[in-house]
Image (cartoon, rainbow, N blue to C red; front, side):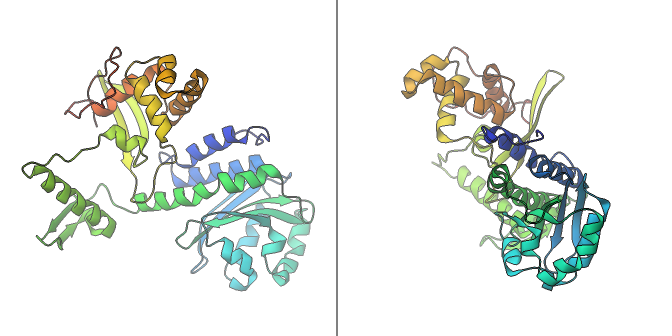
Amino acid sequence: MGRRVSKRSPNLVAADAVSRIYDLTIDTNTWFSEIVAMVRSVSDRGHGALGTIFHWSNFAVVHHELDGAHPKNSEVLPRGTPNPSVWSTSARFASSRVLFTLSRASSFLASPFWSGLTPLLREISVKDCVAFLGSDGVGTAIGFGAPSGVHRPELLLPERYFTQCVLPHVGTAFRLRRALTGLDLDTESVEAIFSDEGRCLYAQGMAQERSARTLLHAAVRYRVNGRKPGSDRHRPSPRDWLLEGRWSLIDRYEENGRHYVVAYRNPVGILDPRRLSGREREVVARIAQGMSQKIVAVELGVKESTVATIAHKVVRKLGLRSTREIPLFWRDLDGTPTSLNSASLEPPKIHPSPRRK
């Protein structure tokens, strides 16, 4: 992310920031430090930035990060977190919502506590702090700050945009990280036994989690129903799951002549923000079948420039280098080759293939 959010085109910065926020390939400490760096790039008042994640129930700090901020900023944390009375009602409300609130520290901290910080603030030449406060929606507060050398600093337009369009994803991504890392994927096998009535009789490993058992039970029912005579239930492909945001793409690579697509399945109710819209799917499905952008524009009744813009967005969302990779990406996801000369829009059927992983 650049040092400053562009006032003319902040969407370009926000898109990159949101994509990075949902990157689960890096550890949580690195992830949080990168987000604090994002905050600094938007709101640095000459005193750096800082970020903190803590539980409201016991005020236990989960993560704390300084980026260019004076080390003594960390002393504010142990002074305030053990004492619930230091937080104003508005601060408690803000930290219970996934949508972040932009404010000033002097506004959401109780007056007696804020006054008690005067000697410390004077020592580090800070008079106030631009504060971004929100949560992961399940009891964990997430806050960021940009210390300021003036009292009640002006809240700038890029900061407001960043608060509304980027930071809400931080709470969702942190909740997703906790859900994924809290399950032991390696030490135990996953097994569950259900009765004919659907009651769980035995669970092992990840299946001990209620949400995981629910998914297993649904998968069993889906498979049983699919085996019934006359069943023609539609089976969505991995491509559909990725484009709908139910799965999130992590990596693509080639090894020993085989193409691999690595993805993870999102928890129920959480969709990848990179999912494609209906119009994007219409465009990319035709490009994957070998149609030129001009023909796609004629078919959909839109301008060719519109198709080019949508195709560019799709390429970024799917992590491709150009639209020329779209047919290959379709092939790797479904395990079946896509004809570049075919105008058929029927989606490829799933067949077992070594390209799928």
